[in-house]
Length: 262
Image (tube, rainbow, N blue to C red; front, side, top):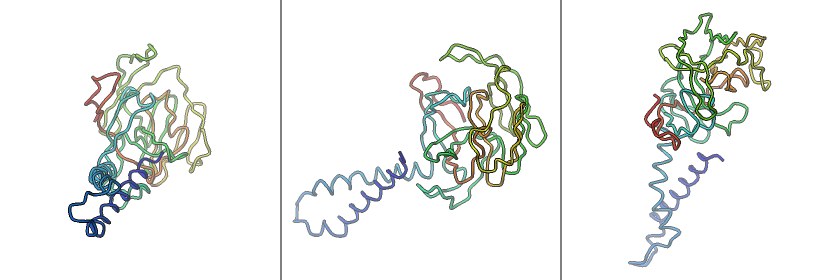
């Protein structure tokens, strides 16, 4: 379901009814006559729908985390807010950038439309910027030939299935964050589809090495062994970007998570 398109259509419809009443219908109603319901309701809802449309399209948009690919940063059931302004102002529905405010930075947690099915929204961490060489070999990440620093932390307990994973603190640029990466997890994840710029990647038994094409990004989940990401389905083009995730505003299962993340 394309909620943005539905909201846009509702905004246009209620706005046109309010405009038509102001230009025509109110002038032809008898003095003191009540507005008919088909004018009263759209006029009443128009300001609210317009406000929601503007906020959701240009400032912030709410999302719910459906999977565990970003554990431990984001948990299943987290309701998050996504900043729509940081990466430029885009036209609603068609998602075309019209004003460039900024670009994704290495380490950002980004929401984007899944390249193989743009009707789906995905969330991963930005690992590779345009022109970067990304190497994920033997479960170690390197960018442009430099191994990304990581520090071992106490094991992470998965409460939903009661098991532990190895946890590390990783530093991508100026961003420090936690990742999960078990010794017995797979080193190499074969590509799932024949994605655009597949020739930029070399797969082997140790993992994958990719060169990120212009205006594209290489994304990875923080739960490295349980994330289908750019290692599997390829690069994210700039036109698929939705925004930068930055805040957890609710979680029905764990209220202590409210206000976390940044």
